[in-house]
Length: 478
Figure: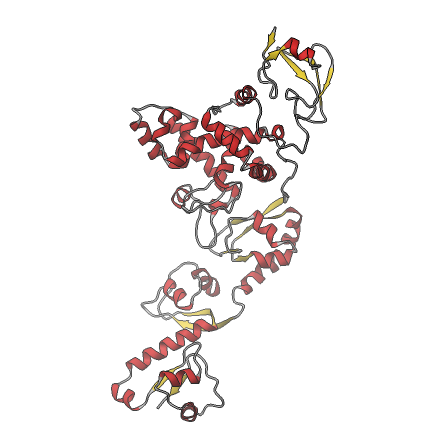
């Protein structure tokens, strides 16, 4: 008599008499016969638990397949095939030479990678599972992010794809994920996952096949349609396989393999005991400039924690133009922030002018806020905030408050002085040789620039005390 142990997770079809001769304990559960013996290949991997035999009421201990220190990279072929069959859900988990190749890679060369993914998954899988369920999508898709970004929300590819789901800039903009020098919402776990769910649902609706939807997620719908045409309008991934880009040919088998290895990591003695530190968080909403480094000091939390909770904030700064912007902070600090909210946000406003000099600028008829901002190297948002402007329009003759850095003011002064000098009458220029000091100039350097005129003469002509000069300073050379 031969008993097929179908979908037992760790058993294969074997002779019943051989099991008994080798001392296996047998029990029945529903229509399946199970065999358990310590340290044998047919044992279960859930150490420390017990299961009840439904028909015999015999308790059989579950024990590890192998010694904990043993590196396991292979199981019997029929067993692996059975495990793949048991994974079959909405997305076909095809077991063939290609998926087998990636399984072996994950179990050997990239074994540590799988261990790291098992450690990080609790950071993002609860979010993925919630949103996948909300959109009615297969739970297996949560493993796609491992292939895309190794569960790193700040991951950026050579092609400039970014975030957990590796959206290209154009695709990110299509899904309204804000991107600029300060904020990149492709790196926002919640917003990017929501966008990924919508995109995957659209791709599945487009092709009616999950393998093709995954291929399109990797190389774009156009490339998949082209491969379908070149294959003679065949509609299965493995049928159009050779017509797809090389990266995409590996993409779907790799996705299948990572599903298998992540679900069976314990069977292969891959260390899955470590768990990444999860920071319980709550949200705050801001409508102005915010410096996360300063915020961390004021509410007494680690800047690294704030960065982990807000990977989309690229330079530790939320610019003032991001209205009603939601930030995550450690949950235990929410009350502290609310208690001191007014003072904290007031300090943030002051922080934007630290180390700057206040000047008054009279708007000319040709001026626009962006040109004024560029001239003084400040943001339009700061100019609007400093002057309580509601829009980007400003009338000619308006006097604006500008907080500019000293170096920018010196350079602007030097530029203005040289423009004025160029406009002077040639006769005046011919009689007096004038030079305006640039950043980094010394009297020795100025002397060398003007044919070696004596430093003492420059000091005498300009009644200088010592040799110190400042950028923008006007000097008579001769």
